[in-house]
Length: 168
Image 1 (spheres, rainbow, N blue to C red):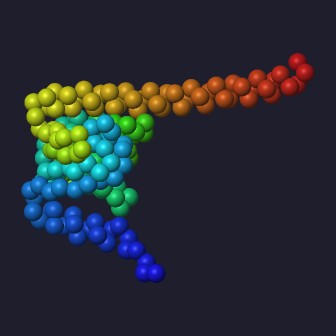
Image 2: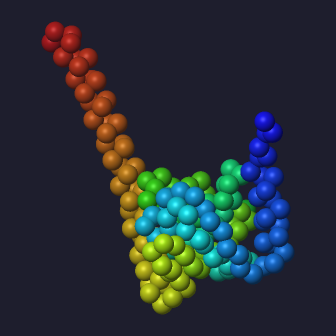
Image 3: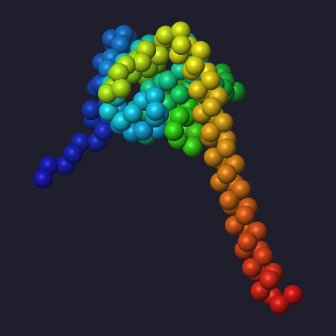
């Protein structure tokens, strides 16, 4: 059996072609972290080049040798002046590691799938995208708070068991 090449074997040449073209490309990404907007197997139309990214835009970026499409929920300028984006999948409770601007491949401008197509540059999405980013951020914050609350409750139960078991 022949060993499978590492994902970077294919990813690097594709990204270099996209960088040279500096226009638009189409690709399918797997996963449901952006459901219901983007579902597993939907075709994404990506606009390449250095777009002016806004809160709410869905970006495609490289992380750990894979491409991800997640929503921009924040931006930060590091002390050295470099711009980073905070991204998160709408259906994912966790935020991504901050994405340096240099890792952003492009911005998703259309989603084509079995439920039709959505143009993310339409007037509706220009208004809805920042709202979706706020809801996604709230979802991530609530998920983090819920995990913390469960951890505190677990510690209180353990402490109660320890104190109650000493024959007080």
